[in-house]
Length: 276
Image (cartoon, rainbow, N blue to C red; front, side, top):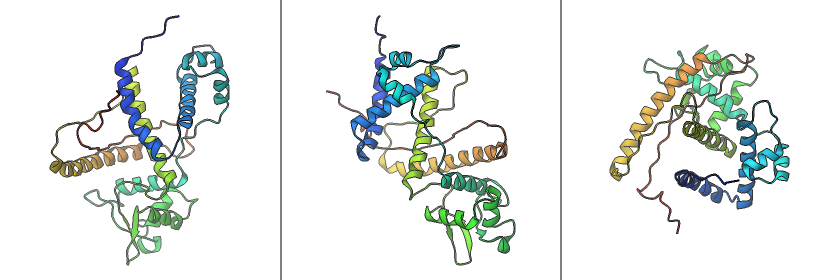
């Protein structure tokens, strides 16, 4: 059987995609064998989920043939627990609270900026942090939610016992588990959208960038500020619409979505790799 030709352009793109991943692996001390095991798992998972034949069960032998992973390894990897994608509890609760704070009156002012909230319902009634937290969940004490948001630097409490949102997004700064969750969700979903657009999808996903290769270093800060401002406006607009459309807990399963923005800069040419 002839071996399929390998797309040289795709291989070049994959090298560029793998470079930052390799940097992360090295920075965290993850050895080659562990990375290979993870790649094997990803190949097996994708073959099982995305490349099935109609009316036929996917077999270890077929997956082995498709992926090049040894049949014994395929059997072992298929028996592993399914990859968990749920957010850690602190992220799920905190992100929903901040989303509501950023988008819904009376928690935003006439300029759609989050207002400082009295900490207790007895101080501010329905326009208080306690009331805001209880809109998200009545099972977790508002004080516990507040302590977590203070811990990660998302909010602060002033001398008047008012709670102020310090950032226009929930960005964990202390917990590695939380930071890694966002890394996996943001990069994973971005790559899903981009790769499906390449391999073909009935309706292409939104995936656009603005890129330049000769920007003066003196202009980078102003461009970063402009990108952050425009990005936050877009995020808040989509977030508001998503909050209005979201289902109540207990409803039938809905759709998962991710919408994000990013900004990156480095010296021109730094991404090039000499493969000699």
